[in-house]
Amino acid sequence: MPTAADADFYLRADAVISLANEQVALVSRGKVSASCMYATARFNAWVSACDFDSSAEMLAAKDETVEYFVEQFRSMLKENYDDYIKNFESYRQATKA
Image 1 (cartoon, rainbow, N blue to C red):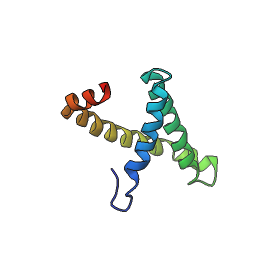
Image 2: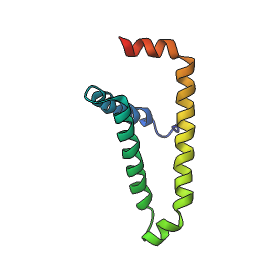
Image 3: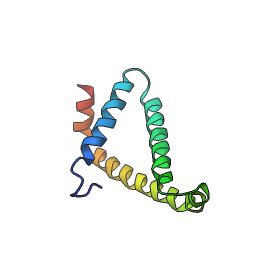
């Protein structure tokens, strides 16, 4: 996912994951997951809005923009899901420690 020009990609992701892990101490993983997905959707709507000069332009690009973000999420989820399948035992041990 990250490009060579973006060395801090994983550092930013890890910072968000760290915050989510702090919240899991207070509420369920499912609630934290739902909040993270909502925050990502809200942030990406804002990022998208910054590229338009009007709501009409934004509306015209809605389907294409939503499809882009859905496909990116799908790809990232599959990559991480496969990683967890491959490393299930070691990852699960680390979370129990």
